[in-house]
Length: 103
Image (tube, rainbow, N blue to C red):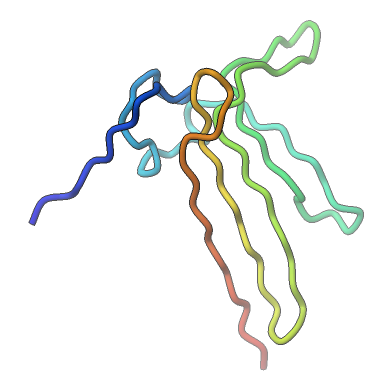
């Protein structure tokens, strides 16, 4: 069986194409901006297509990862990932949950 490719009505910022970008390593194509929690864990990671080193400004948000941490009933981290269209609206999402084993 072949893999199904999802086609969208708009183009994604990451690729400039209307094909689902979830299988791509977006960290390779982008500039990362991290917003930290007080305990030094990432709260949000944003991946932009452009970064102006002279002004320190990011532009053209392609992907945003938002992290939520839980300690009960078991330690876990939820990562909500959003891929943006070129017009700035959210095109598709994915949620990943990492559960840390306890002894």
